[in-house]
Length: 101
Image (cartoon, rainbow, N blue to C red; front, side):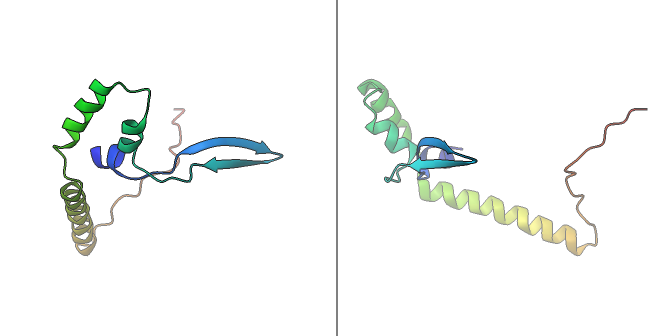
């Protein structure tokens, strides 16, 4: 969660405006991570920024990304193994009919 919520760069939505049937979205031109946005924010006091900086020192983004990739690879290999055994994984139903009986 730390990797996605604080470390991955994102484009911030500045505004939305309805133009007839369409919605025009305006995004910030600077692409930075939420952590960098927090640290640049004037609304956050220096004590909180210092505490957040100390917590972020515990995390290595490269190591986190490798762990995520390792978990994804394990899931993919498990899926391949199930498919090779001839068992079809049950698809997630998009619509579950209601039983009136």
